[in-house]
Figure 1 (cartoon, helix red, strand yellow):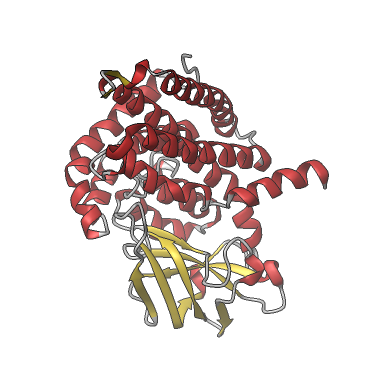
Figure 2 (figure 1 turned 90 degrees about the vertical axis):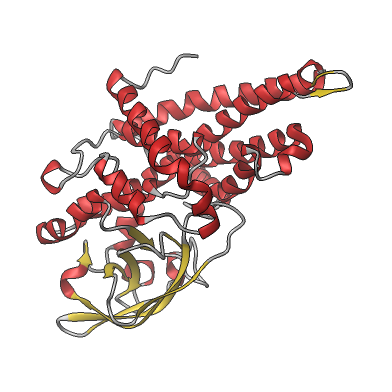
Length: 380
């Protein structure tokens, strides 16, 4: 079915993204995977190409276009290229909205030009060793010392944690406030007491640096408070729909790409004197996966369209995230099986897709959390 949500301008932008991937990412990606981190030069190249800060106003160096369909193009093309390590989506679609919506004018002029040029790489630090989806369990504290905050605590599983120059830290500013006693503080590279731990050893997305962060009496200026004091809970909930949509878009793009490469493989690979594609079981597997992808694509494109128009609610974003990422997980497993032993070899894209994509049903809110959100909306 022909997709109807993109204009000619979106497709021209898609070619720009593909050219960037072919020139600046794919030739270096194998080395980044070995190194466990991408090159900062790639971030600056993304900035020069206009891929960073798509929704940031032009006066701060951004693209000035908040149409989420452009972000969807980026997620689709990076997913098809098998290059999740350069976490542009995290930078643009998760952290960007906090800076554009919550930052003061002074903060915008201080941070957004570097955000758009790739000179300032960003991360958000919410998850702790003892607190994931449950914000009430956050123990990192920020004590008011008059003209500054003193931050103490630790975070883990922080994407871009090694490279980040700006880290949006969720910290407890009111001890008795529960989830409503949290604030967002921007910790900058070089602040005394801010230390990075291990670049964590993951089963997939090796080149995407994921780190432990430690804060020991870090003095954070009062002017680095982002948004309202004790307002982090509301700020975080406001941006979750876009975060989950970004993950969902990558999920369906991954499933479709897996279907595409596996369809080509079973046509070429022979067993018992004939192509695998001649076996009824294989045809049924491909038929089932193609149908699941087509149905999911129709729903996701509607969600993309609604989000671009500002009408998508959190429940439907949760539905999209749950369904698309679980489909991605099933598709990776089934397509690897159809590749046989070759599917277990890292030189084949299906093997990398299997390990790279496994995190999709976990971050941004697990599948179980998505079901709880949907269930509460229906049953109270």
